[in-house]
Length: 430
Ligand SMILES: Cc1cc2nc3c(=O)[nH]c(=O)nc-3n(C[C@H](O)[C@H](O)[C@H](O)COP(=O)(O)OP(=O)(O)OC[C@H]3O[C@@H](n4cnc5c(N)ncnc54)[C@H](O)[C@@H]3O)c2cc1C
Image (cartoon, rainbow, N blue to C red; front, top):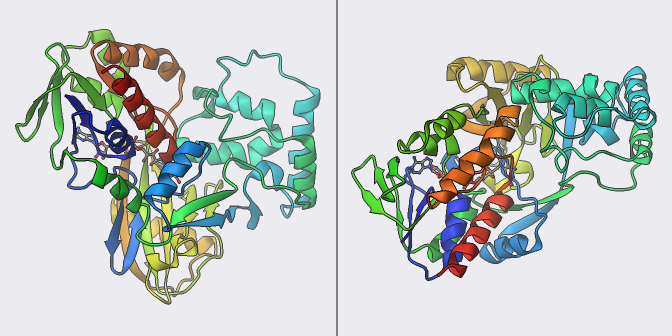
């Protein structure tokens, strides 16, 4: 029997693609979806922060379009950066037009310097900060990349590696940077110029669409311990499952903590993996269209959030008529916490400073969720430790997949693709 722990997209996709192979999914929550869930509150539908579908793999896109046939709407991205009291289009590196002239000049000169002074540093092992300076230059580092990323990652950028950045932060060509400084637009830039999103029901309709094909699923049962030698999993509710293969989609440090028979070196290595948590603040406001944008990035420290988005601008059915809804994301270290009332106060003050909310705006729905595992930190320890951890687990018949199973920065599409790929491998081993 194949035992799958976690009914997020990676676990559901594994079960879906296993087809008639016997498997059971066990999920600790009362419903499927993991991070890709939506919920209703006071007439609004909120996601556990904004979840938009971007595709790079044609077959995963086709699968999602088949599962959600007729229910997806396509949108041209309207994402912006708010800095120097100005909105500029995302991504920053090719859209500096509109910023104060001295800022644009600094960004241009810094970028040009990266082309004329190639760095002597070898590419491997280079920090994220060095990557930014080498590829984008000092101006873009100072006015966006460093403050934004330090706010998001809650860590100095020279502690982070740069092996994950290439698809998220593309290096532009000089022509694109110049065009962006002059306000000339000749192409969409970046990894997500358009996106898909369900017209109704929030992103939670996606995991639900897998469920008719997942025959054996248990809810409300949390994995407590794995005996990797006997291949036996025990759950907090007393459930005991013997398995041939275990597919785990829970965060890998949580999994390893639950495997007492793993070597001490592996357990120590997993305990040293770092991540950043995110408060997702969802708001309903009694005023229509508080912003025209889809989402906005905030690099400057006077705004406590790094991003705010407007779900009703991509699916009006997500809220009450005459109202707007917002999701706001605030990074924090997992060891730090802010009481919800204080956080809501800080968020509201920041939104007013940015001119998005007005002092007399009535908040008609407010909710705070803490995403304990949100962004995995790509540091030197991860680079050294992760391959050994995953290899040891594989040797013992445990496949750790998904965003937190692989301990990486990946999307919904990737979670589905990993489940598919693993199921195909397991089926081939029949
Ligand atoms: C702030 C933020 C914004 C994002 N925005 C986007 C976006 O716009 N577009 C995009 O494509 N992706 C986005 N993502 C990424 C996306 O959420 C993930 O890639 C995807 O949902 C991961 O699915 P998963 O199945 O790997 O993990 P999860 O969704 O985390 O699923 C793991 C499951 O395991 C369960 N579980 C955990 N521990 C146990 C246990 N001990 N026992 C039993 N069950 C357990 C959990 O309850 C959960 O259901 C975003 C992520 C974050 C943090």
